[in-house]
Length: 248
Image 1: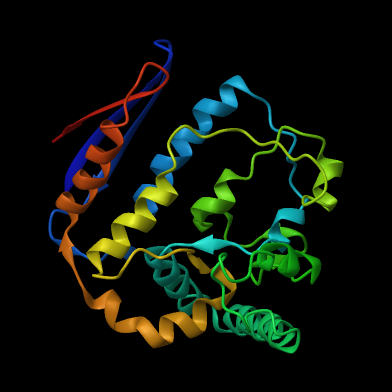
Image 2 (image 1 turned 180 degrees about the vertical axis):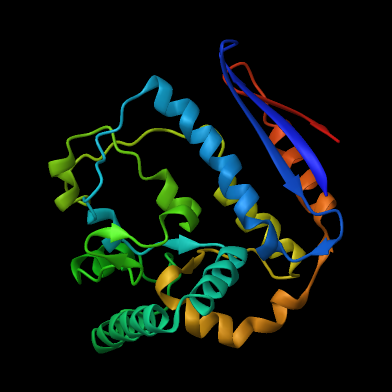
């Protein structure tokens, strides 16, 4: 294992320090997701020290959104489903099937999920009021393992506005480093795929993974993978946010 000691500094006075153990043998991108989620949480925690969020536990309006995820997140969440206790796995799969049935009935993806073709797909999906299959009693059942996009939902505006985010002015905390977008682009390149105009909707995970499971067999050095992503973040250093690291 290689230990990455990472320091994040904002405006010369706010610090966040994290140690991450990264395998130095070959791994898939899926294996790297927990470390990347923890790193992204550090960026979020820094912003939450400066700005208070109006989000509260039990509010699940954002869980009705069409959640975009990267290729590596799709495999990661699918593995998570496969490792759930049988009873819970069955319940989650049923919710996926129910959601897909509604979407097919409404022909939501008839014109594809490319925003240049179907510019209203996000709003159309939200209006169907389909809850995320991982939502249980208005609480995320995979909160610790939730996708990058879900971690970004830290609103500062009136929570009452969330009931209609397409007509109300919704404001959320601005995260200075979008690791989710970086990972999505990086993974597409590693898998030898062309740039994807829109990430995979979470709701399509089971079918997408089944058709593309061969991609998850590819492996690279864990240290190289993480080092490459970290270096891309370092390049973005400026006065508002600076990242540095050492490897042991």
